[in-house]
Each structure stands twice: as structure tokens, then as C-alpha cells.
Length: 444
View 1 (cartoon, rainbow, N blue to C red):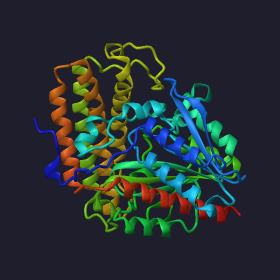
View 2: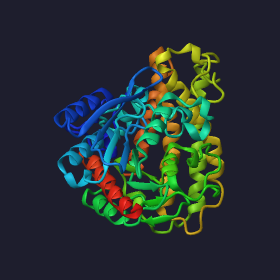
View 3: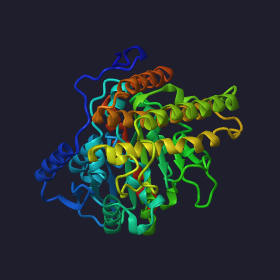
């Protein structure tokens, strides 16, 4: 059975890997121990499984920046970026002269423990070890879909930290599997676009100028997207989340704002093409149709394994194990919930994408949605595959072949090229520092 995607042009890594959450904590402990006069490392909460949630603070100035890593389990670049930032702040007195820096090392340690792809050799290899929680189990997004009394402990810990340090800037470190780099802002940071673009160019990382994550949002420069005002209609109305209720907006009550910095694992120049798409409506129809068909294929595997009915209608992960989830070990139940949740997004998005695209829709716009449409069923299939392998279900090899085929097609179509981990972290760290400097000037 084919187990790699070499023919797609995806580069293998040489001695490159991300960090596990315990490795990140140990490195942070060593850094803080080197400067006990400036650093404080402490536990600020515990996850649902009892893992510590740790905050490393550097400096004692009243004005503060909060950096959040590990909000999404499948985006581990935040770990290396955080360590790089801590080292820079310790070495550069100007960075901490009037600003204290606070680093939430891993917002979702339980999720990090389930995502095992820390040194992927291909997009297929990445997905065979993939995990990303269902939306209501993601620390930053839980407030947008759950009432306050049902928020997970990871979210409550993050909110307490924001209330304590009152950052003028919160930065959330994110990553994408395929595409380019972009920034989302809850309020504009004038001047950020130039250093962001310069850094991306120097490191040969494409700028995703019209990402599906921010479709229809105002822009302050290429790849820098500003969230619309509350109540603005969204481009994809079927999506259940409301960013104005996320932890990103919590900083606003203290006069702050949030920047979300995305960097790709595999880069694609297709997401950096502002030319008008010659046939956007037809392309969007094909993407919508493919999404529905692929989601249906994964659903067939779910039903065939007797796992098609969910046990937890609200999706917050606290329901009793029944309706199929009781048939799988507790350790992989989050994978099953997440697979079902991802599949649940497909029908609504397929309908959204059948609506007429924006006038003059660019190649980037269509390519970004194409990538979005590919990753939803692929992630659902990948997480279900891990469940089926764990339970020894006989359909696992067939689903494995499907995951390999979709991964190869994804990487091949987008002409994927690996971005070295050090380049991912360097670009993200540069963008964080630029955002801190420009946001501080704006706030003065």
C-alpha cells in the first residue's frame, strides 16, 4: 500500500520537528531559570484531563502583551515561535523596557497530546496522526458556541489570564497545513502590513491575500484582514461560530485587541495570485459538489462501522457515551467527536459556496476555498481512520487508502513545498514583534 506522497513534490524534513507540550514546558522552565530576576513560570489552570496549563511571564512593566500558543492541536508551530520570542525578549532590553510579555505555552494540552504529527514527511503522514478538536472543545472558540456556565476549563484559564494581565495586544499563534501566511485583527494595527509582507518575502512564504478564513473582511494591506463590526453579515452564514464572542474579543474590554498570525507548513503560490479568476462560479460549483461527495464517502465509513450517530448533540464533549461512542476507547472518543463535527459543517458550506461569488473573485479567493473544501473531509477521514485503527475495524485499510489519495491530490494540485520549521517560527515571531510595536504606538 502506498504510504507517502513523494510524487507530489512535498519535501521530506531533515532533522526538523515541532515540540511536544512537555518538551515545550521543559524548555520554558530552563529559560525562566536562566533569568529568575525577570521570569516567572506558573500554572494558571488545568485541562479536562488534569494536564497543567502554564504561563511564562517576562518583565514587570504594567503594559503587557499576551501570546497564546497551542490553541489548535494540529498547529504546533506556536511552540517553537514562543521559545524564540522568549529568547528575544530576554536578550533585548528594549522589548521589555515598557512592556511585560506573557506566554501561555499551550492553550489545549489535551489536544496537543492527541495530535502526534510533529515531524511530518508528507501531507499524508501529517494526516495519519492528525487531531483537531470539535469546535466547542477548542479553547478560543468555545465561548462563541457555548453558554458561559459550560465553558471548558481551558477556556476559563485563558479568560482569567486575559483578565489578569489586561493586554494591549493579545497574539494567537496559528498555522495552516497548506497555503500562505496571513494575519487577522480584531482591530486594525496601522503599519503592520509592511513588516509582515517583508518578512514573508525574505523567507519565501506566500502571502494569502484573500483567505477563506476572512472572506469578505476589510483589509489594511495584503494578507492583513480586519474583522468586521459586530452584526455584519458573513460570507459563509452556515458556519456556527461568532468571532465577536471568542476569547479574541475578550481583550477589548481592557482597550486591547487581538492579532491571529497564521503561517503554513506547506506553501503554495496558488494562494498568492490576485488575478481575476476566469470562471469563478463554475469553479465554486465544482468545489461545493466535491465537498458534498467526499463528506458522503466518509459518512459511509462512519455508518459502516456503527459510529454514525452522535452521543452528544451539543458537541461540547460532556455527553454520556452512547449512540456509537461507547464502542470506542475513551482515548479516541475526541477523535470520533471531531470527525463527526467536521462532517456536520460540509452540507452548509456546500450550500454557501453555490451562491454567486464576489464580483471579480480572484484566483486566490477560489484557491483558498478549494483548500478549505479539501481539508474538511480529509480531516474527518483522518481522525476516523485513527479510531478504526484503534478498534481494529476491517474497513481501516480502505479508509487509509482514501486518506492517502486525498492527501496526494491536495498536495499535488497546490504544488506544495515544505516551509522549514525555523522559517515558520521566524516569520511568526517577527510578525508578533512588529504587531506589538505598532499596536503600542497606536495605543499611546
